[in-house]
Length: 111
Length: 117
Image (cartoon, each protein chain N blue to C red):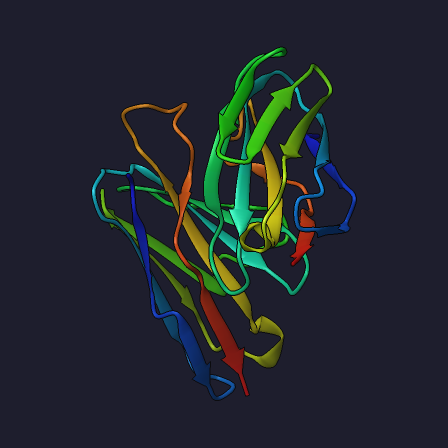
C-alpha cells in the first residue's frame, strides 16, 4: 500500500529564516511525486512534479528535490505570504490513478 | 493554466436534504475526475474516481448509494450527497487531470464546505 509521511506537522519560522520540509514515501514504482500548497478554505494549488531521483525543481523561494525514498521542499528566506499548508502526494506507476497525499506541513512565517 | 471550477463553495442545509456539488474543468477535457474529502487539519482522503461515461470507482468504506457521482461529459462531474446527516459535514474537493497527458498534475477546485444542521 502506498504511504506518504510528512514532517514536521507544523513549522513556525521568522521571515527570512530558511528551512526544509520532508516527505517520505513508499510506493510500488513511482510515476510522479507532487507538491501542492493549500491555503485555508481553498483547494490545493499545484507547485511541482518530480519524476526521478536526483531531479530538482525551483520556483521563486521554493526548491523541491527527490531521492528514492523522500523529497524535500526547501524554502529560502520565506515571507509571511508563504504561510500555508504544504502537501506532498505520490502517484504509483501502475494501478490506481489517483494521488495519495501526506498529512501536510502547516507553515507559519512570522514578520 | 488549467482551471477547475467547483460550485457551490459553501452549503448549509437541514439533515435529510440531498446536496449536489458540481466540478467543471474549464480549459481542458478530463476523462477522469477525482472526489476528495478533507476534515479540519487533516489531509485529503480520496472518496472516488469518476470516469466519463461509466460508473465511478469508490474507495473502500465510501457508500456509493450515499455519495452519487455522475460524469456525463468531459468537463463536468457531479457529487450528490443523498439524505445528508451532520456526520457528512466536511470539506469536499474535486480534482481533474488533462486526459491527453496522463503524467500531468491533478488540478483542484476550491472545494465545497458542507454543513448539515
